Image 1 (spheres, rainbow, N blue to C red):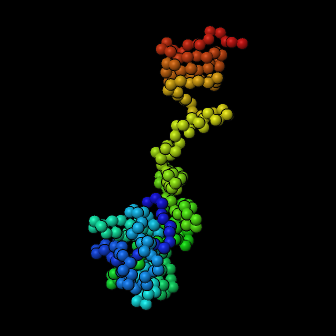
Image 2: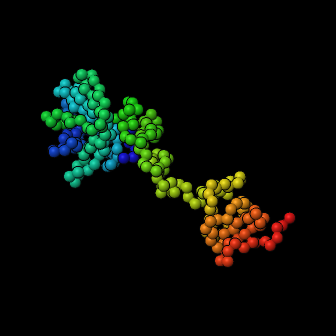
Image 3: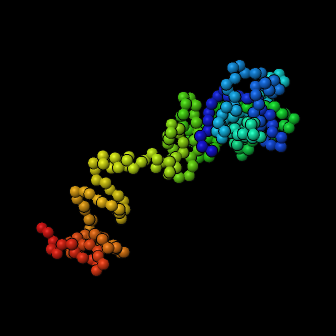
Length: 258
């Protein structure tokens, strides 16, 4: 799970899938069976239009015969295809259960979807904008981002990742994706424009091809414990620059310069 869509006004009738906790998304002609009046102007606002696998905040409701809501559940779900050409809705994380007749709201601690009464066959599912931070942050390791005006969108961060905007989408970015942003050209350009000394907190700096610079400073210190041929070292005791060869340490200059 990554971005969770927050958007209002998508609504569809649905019914239970036999021997499953999921629901089949139906066309608008089934609104009559749900007990809910047909919303005005929803021809292009069907839940089934969401892309497959897109997580979104949902509200699923049971309606009385008089057209008023009886019970509702909110949470995070997704759309998927089943049976070849049918669209189904799966509840993944449930956050609240509302009893409209009693006027009560219960937070679902374990986030497991409610088992609705078996006699109820038809429901209404709609997209939903969370009303509280508790609802919006129902998934672990999530942060709220602003994707569209007034629609906070939670983004779940993966392990060893950063939060960023990639391909015009706020998302969790891993090391491989970050490498596509911080290209070689950008890294080289940043180093070229850096005017101050480049300080690396390491005891070893390796250049594979060629190093071109005005000055090289060898910091005085003890000889490396496991030198390899080619190692340079400033010996402050002998006051000279040394190089390690197959014959051992050799002085680069025979006499110190003034």
